[in-house]
Image (cartoon, rainbow, N blue to C red; front, side, top):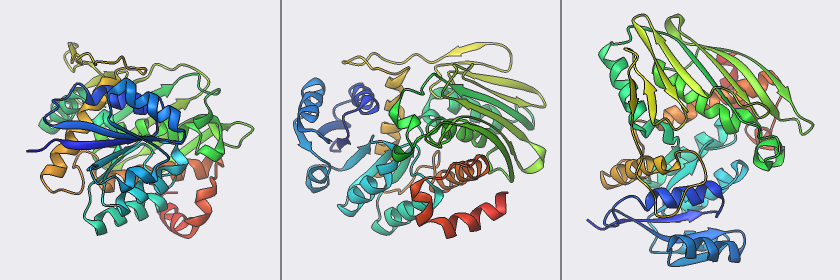
Length: 347
């Protein structure tokens, strides 16, 4: 079987780490063949560092490259929809960084288009492919934790200086940048969507949130308490609590350690990459890359671990939280009718 040929869109930090992660996978299965960036020099340097044969200025050349099978979209939030749709229109499969889109309306339109084109499209919620998450789901599935009653999760770092977080024009705010992680782990534990949401937040001068607290109510009385912050470093753990015990995911968005129900600390070391990653445990991006390959080879259009419905549900929760705390993005106006119909169910 020929290797899956990857192109990377953007030459920023997360794209660097994705390239590092792919380098730890067998070359017979995965190849990085092209990179596109807004500046040609940035693309050239990125290609040289990672041994990528072709580099382009802009993203259209990636879409036109006939030797690209799948595109990893690592751009800022507000262009995820535009770039991902461009790649789908060109017949490329897509793995798009989280959040998949700025709101549920965009996400719905993008995923519907991918399905119409018969192409794989997945939001890059890499957390769910870590062995720690797999172990958690197996424990829950066997009933080892009993009935899940509560999830406590906090995620925060000093990020107010980071443009993609503080600027509305880039789709900023912690709901979109960090909240996706807290929401997805709650849904991973309960295996359902929340039926009610209560949220409060702190906004900056740009009108985006620099911190939120929210309670997600799930069917059967389960509750997830989530907190995000771009001001303070938080514990950054997720504790899943059931009637028979609990499991704690450490560095829960990329956990290579967990404390199991019996108090045992389980470790899942990552391999070393050829070029050093920038962010914590980013070699773990290899797991979502391999899942992408597996599903594409099977002719599937989505992954059961991050299904299209999962992405739509997460986006809907983000929309609901943003509405309650008063954060509105330019993209929301386009999909306002769709958004209001959906929020009427949750609020």
